[in-house]
Image (tube, rainbow, N blue to C red; front, side, top):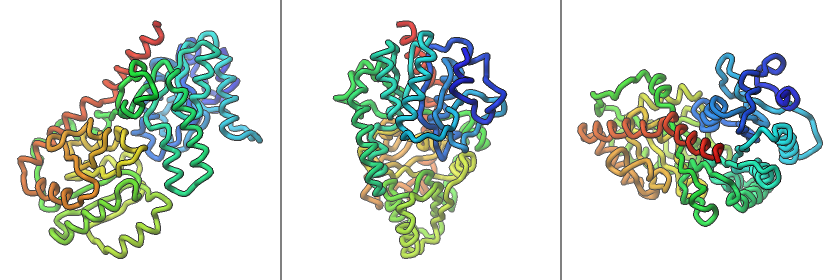
Length: 412
């Protein structure tokens, strides 16, 4: 079957490589994902999931790929449609391309695997008309793009993604399985419980610790004189940057350079001017912003930290997530201070492997940091519990659970 040569080209190998060994084995599952754009590709869920699915079940077919995707030499598991100039809107073009692929694979195909975006419309169509099983992989709430664009003042895009999100929520009950990488409570009232596969996000333990130069827990965890606090992620008001600045200001007054703060990640566009004014007004010498760094560099910054922050505000799009950054913090044995969000609260136990704190009380965060600095035994205990907690979220274990569900679907 030459459907790949007809409809898809291999990313970075457009002319010669078709990976025939993998693609000619009559795959039972195919993933039709509209995009794989991410600023943090190596550690991102889409990349981890794509590699697992391609290695075990069949091709992962992207409509477009980010140039930042880091493929290993000879790796041929990501495919994309040829770039064609067309007068059709992007979403309609994707649906037509996806429909052609589904028809070309039928009847060998048993399962179509989509995301909770407009690719779900294809999954719904396939389940109703082509008698295929339909799986939806949810690592973000379907309405997250709506809130993202609304908060940034992009009204047209917000309305478009609100419509897509509502359509997706209305058709999710027809899916044969929901790979739920956010807290399942997010879908109460929308999807029957028996169709929700509770599979949280994960972390590549071996790779993260290798980059940091760690193989076993650093038993000599200490509380140094200069205590380094790190935040990695988008820098913006909805991600809790105001809280971090309030904490930094208070510790500067109390401890000077004994506590330093490092922010790693791009500043959200509409918050740049506000951020610059705020830093100028506060004049905090104990805080530094590094902007976007490659994933490996960010991991090394985390490894150098004494504590890490996850100060996200509670909101419909962020309340249910299992943040990979929190798992990476834990994997390196870092005490994590987090707002008490529903998803994070499932990973962290307060005063055991981290701290769950109110988002409107910077004094409480300062108090915890001071306690960690002063109490070496407490610091070592929290750090050890964090280290071993992360091992429950290794991608190998997470994907083993997903594999069991998929094999059940294929055998049904």
